[in-house]
Amino acid sequence: MKPINHPVAVAVGHVCSDTLCVLDGFPKENTSNRIQDTDRQSGGGASQAIVAFARLGGNAGYLGVLGDDSNGDFVFEGLQQEHVDTSHVVRAHGQNAFSIVCVNRNNASRTLINYHDRLPALAFSQDQVEYICGATYLHLDGSKYENAIRAAHIAKQGKVTVSLDGSSMQKDNKLNIDLAKLADILIMNEVYPCRLMEDNNRERALLEIAKWGAEVVVSTSGEEGCLAVVDGKVISFPAYRVEAIDTTGAGDVFHGAFLRACDLQYPFHEAIRFSSAVSAINCMSLGGRRGIPSLHQTLQFMAEHEFYR
Image (tube, rainbow, N blue to C red; front, side, top):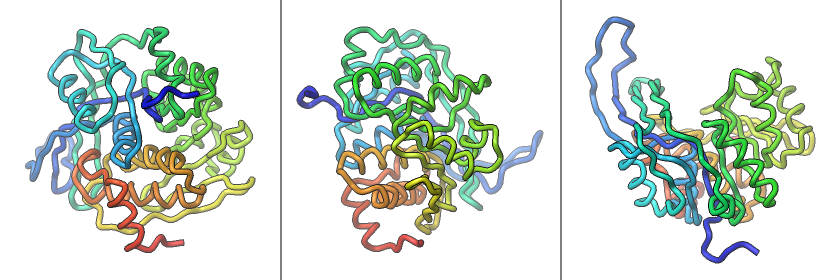
């Protein structure tokens, strides 16, 4: 039996501060371009996913190591403000991860420049192990590989469903395969399946990955929607059509929304539609955090917008 009031979903992975700079086109090297608008928000794959889960009404928690600098303070307080449980967050001496996000307002594309922290790995104390095993879902973004692979093994031993954001990759592809094979819910970006299987045919790669036993195998493609393996076949799902302002975090919130859909016991096709709606809504605001909708906003959007098939 799971502990009462324990987070249903726990995330382990990347949390950073994002400084967003809106530009009229990305500058060429050794030139300059004036910033049209700017903002600072919390970012990171695991962070945005678990905040999406929380904003959609889920009981969420985060387990990780954050720096003791101002960036660490900013993202730590940001998680707390979103009602994400931070009782097992470790603060270590050092600089927290941060990113400069350049948003091209002509086409809503974003270009990231990242600083990856040098903070220590999680110790996975007995208390931290119990925190993972008390959840229903563990979400990983694959960053800090040592943390990800250990957390995944702990979750599997505790019969916790493992969700993996297939995007961050190690140079040694065997390590990527080892982690991916532990996922029960494997939702990847467009290039991850091909790199993982060393096969340029994405559909064929997805079918091979599905043989590993994951319950969910999906590859997202932004405005093109996503591909999913359903009953041994690759099925194409569309995306909602919106006027995008910034695509930062669109894939991250898709993961959190999908887990919340599972928590709400939505059928697979409806879970994809729900996650696509959350992602689309988020794209209509600057940054990856500010535009994450509530459950009510998402359901209203779905009622008012056609899901193109």
